[in-house]
Image (cartoon, rainbow, N blue to C red; front, top):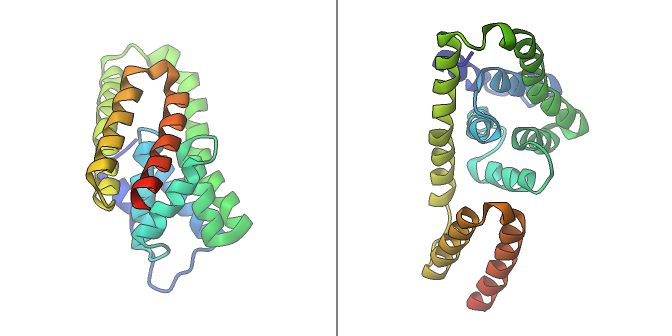
Length: 195
């Protein structure tokens, strides 16, 4: 269960000079995955903070890793752990990061699957699930704000992002072609504006 104390503990820095070994990477990703509720978009800011506080990556480098992770298929927290683990510890680091992120939710799903039928209608369980779900939009908004403030914004870029966001909201069933087509068009137009 998420508590602020456990979240801080999971993201707390190691002693200075400790390099990212596969075991340390596993522990960091396992700790974050075990105490974070809300999926990949909720975990990514915590992962970035943990890696930055340990001095393993800088903020800009983490955004590059995160952007790379988004290009891979699969759950966002998993691909972020995989890419960051690979960068910090090679193939063993990638495996450690991936297993660290996957084991807590796997164990939780097995446990919840065994218990939810019996206890799912209890008011305390319903209240927990409703409260946990309410935190996700705030965590996503914080990540978007943090990423957006580091971009160079021009009127054409603002217009393009706004139009693309509206198109995604208005056409959710066609989100993949709208996103890919809009991104490609935006890229070509931005190259033309900058040339």
